[in-house]
Image 1 (cartoon, rainbow, N blue to C red):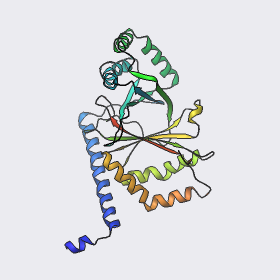
Image 2 (image 1 turned 60 degrees about the vertical axis):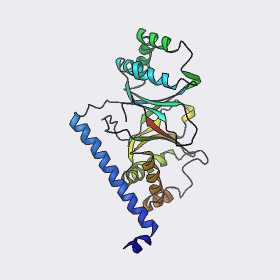
Image 3 (image 1 turned 135 degrees about the horizontal axis):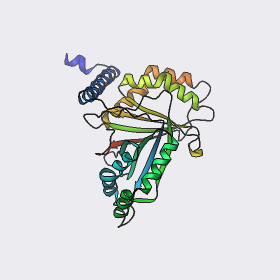
Image 4 (image 1 turned 180 degrees about the vertical axis):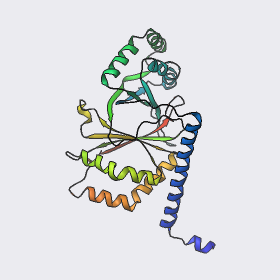
Length: 281
């Protein structure tokens, strides 16, 4: 038996490992759902507009920036009717240089509601006091270190689910830039094929977005957020996706009239670790 196992084809072993990983991921997702049900699943907010905000911490100020969000800012966001969705540090692989960006996602009913809430937040005496005290030894963010992108949920996106997870997951924020005239082909491929293949392999489709139209820098782009049990699982699952026969067929058929994605630079991936104060974990 040992001899037979030693000569088993590697592709077979890889498929078996992929199936096992997908099954483990499904059990993990089921456990998350069960915990949410036992705790009384919270009512999910109705969100028509998302905002991805990216802060680059000033040197040595990352912990203070986190503390301000944890201890003050998130509570004030909620006070003014905003929905904090998720707060993430950039995942740093062992041996890689650190990245001091903080990514966070906010949700609102619409743009008018968003603008009104941020105006009230900025004028809140409690926030003004917190901000002044936190900045007394210098800004917590680097010069030019605040970016934001307005996003509408794609029509095929899963609904936002903020049910707590029993353990923190690993997330990934991906931005695709389409070749001219190909953006809707990319959306159709996700809607009709890719999301289902992701799920079969064990990945979690979390949110899919279209940038709001009044942002020229976001032309021909789409963004989405994925979740995995661990960084290692993410690597294995993407390897399985790339080797998947159904995906290979879908990819080839969708590009008979030319590539859908700009090359180079058509795919930008940022792996994310939830902060200890993130609602989404």
